[in-house]
Amino acid sequence: MVLRADARLRAAVVGTGLIGGSVLLRLHAAGVDVTGWDPDERTRRQARLAGVPTADRLADAVADRDVVFLGGPLPTLPATLVEVAAATAEHCLLTDVGSTKAELVGFAAEQGLTRRFVPGHPMAGTDRAGLAAALPELFTGAAWVLCPAPDGLAAFRRLATLVTDVFAARVVPMAADRHDAVVALASHVPHLLAGALAGAAHRSPLREAVLALAAGSFRDGTRVAGTPAQRTGNMLRGNRDQVLAALDQVTAFLDELAGALRSDDADALTARYTEAGAARAELAGRPYDEQVRSFPPGAEPAEVAWLHGIGAAGGHLSGCRDVAGTVSYVAHLPQT
View 1 (cartoon, rainbow, N blue to C red):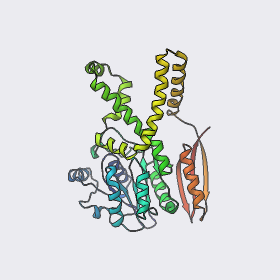
View 2: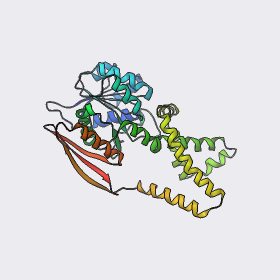
View 3: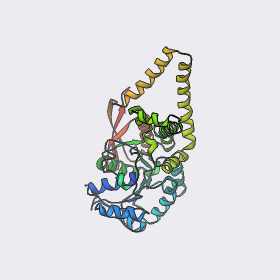
View 4: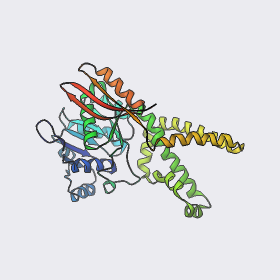
């Protein structure tokens, strides 16, 4: 159970679809005093049937809370952020779970909210949607990106502790623009490729035979094509420039493969797949070195630079403790 100095942590989740709903269920399971809200009345009723408190009005859900998680469709997040900020006290920490960050970070800065708004993106999900698909253990062991701002480090530290202690996730500190470039290749382009492969099969004159013979490679390669189409479209449009740049990188590698095949160059084809296989193998388990780093009061610029460097290097945080203004992090960096 997460505690404040004087009482249980009070949290709220606004927007309880797959990701927001999983946040809600996990907080509830951990014994946090949490209330959910969703614009859909049926979703609110479903949460209540699961034993999770849910308010009928957004303002009631977020009143007197210590932290509020913002979910919902990407295009709605700026307006939701403003509404929730106006309905909460200055001490209330705000964060989101959206899959793109740079645009929302810029908006939060314009609104003067960077001291208490910490942009976030838990890198977990399924090809299903809604509260019915939510899982309280969805984030266990997952990467959870948080974007620290120089004037928002106190909020970042609080949220990093919550994410590691309650959700058992790996905190990846990262600059917002770097996040968007990374997820374009790690997450968004795979949605494009899955859609292209599934769409080509659907249009093929051999469609029925293709689907009858589709085995693991086709199912794995097209899994995220089953994600709700509007959600995928919002994600891709919200990170359009970075996605198109990453797609150019993928297309260039695909052209190398196709060129080797056209010229019947077995060595080149084998070399490209050896290169690709090495990257795939790293997903099975990467060795990390642990590093403990402390920052005294007044070292905020160095702290932010170090945090950004951890994320850029492929590292993550597993712990954060603030004692009398001196913060200590436990970081893990890939062995080189």
